[in-house]
Image (cartoon, rainbow, N blue to C red; front, side, top):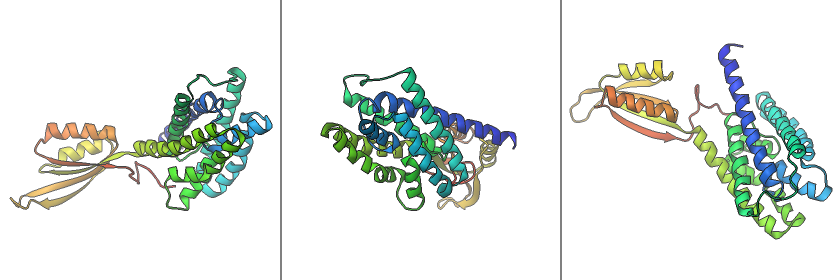
Amino acid sequence: MNRKVIYKTMFEYAFISFAILLMDVGIYVFKFPNHFSFGGVSGLAVVLNEITGIAPGLINLVINFVLLIIGFFVLGKGFGIKTTYATVLSSVILSVMEVLFPLSKPLTNQPLLELLYAIALPAVASAMLFYVSASSGGTDIIAMIFKKYSTFDIGTTLILTDVVFVAMSFWVFDIRTGLFSVCGLVTKSIFVDHALDQMKLSKYFTIICNDPEPICAFIRDTLNRSATIYSAQGIYTHEGKTIILCALDPRQAVILERFIQKTEPAAFIMVTKSNETIGKGFHLTM
């Protein structure tokens, strides 16, 4: 295994670890005490804890284990290993929080405020995990399977897999908690889609210029990207032009714009937002 692969793997698992910590804070501090059940195994754990009295962390671990085995077979080894790590880490962190920071009631007396945090933190964390082809386990695995074999986006598949658990909250708790949970599920699904789109966002450049060499050299040597060039002709002057096509992440896009404005201010630049760029150096389909 070369150094580049090792660094990439270390970054991915550090990224996953941070996402799981973020998710568990949202679940334990804001979701569990308020009995919010807007989907996922953690939502089911809230309901089953109320019925059986079994610790939510233990319920999480058992259900996740079963779904994890399914994920290994359907979604592949790479996804399975990352999800296994995320699932075990999540259950461990939740169990540790239950011991070190026991919560018998909500943190505040503002359920709407706590609902926002209970939605936002796990949703951002889920998007981060999906971004590196992982998940927190549970119903996220079912959602990823639906996504793989359907044309639905991840937000829609999350709603489809979690709607039953949300419906149970009306029966186990009360109408108020159930209505909060419905709002939470819908908002979470939208939030995950939006956050994931932002993480996958890239900029697509179409650059029309007279001297392509400095720009191409900058893209190749400084930004460590590639580009495609071809010849064109202006319809008024019939002068020869070179068109450069290049896809960059948002940070690199700003750097390239500044370089072109400095070195060839007469160049004509068209920048388009791309919600998803698939290929080497960007994202690979699962």
